[in-house]
Image (cartoon, rainbow, N blue to C red):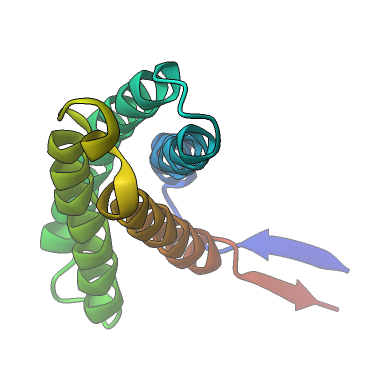
Length: 145
């Protein structure tokens, strides 16, 4: 039994997948730090969440740019609709992450609160959805006998 991986430019897709892993991990880290802050009121958790969000935005911007270019270059393909949906999820993740970064830049309790945790949860969910969309598309295996 042989297995072949679908995709001609696997190096390019691998780099894209590595870049996508950063927003997934960093937005989830920011959510965990927000929850820790709400439970402990230790101000350092908000600083940690702010830095995690900033890192997620840097890599999320690269992922969004890559997804946009990928969609534009492959407009005439049958799967261009799924590529557009993927770009829309990544772009929404990035925009809400930016709003979350601005919200976390506020002072003390108002920097997290219900809105901050909610934004962190939504960006984490969007990052996970983007990861699921990307990796379910790239790991189609065919078994040949």
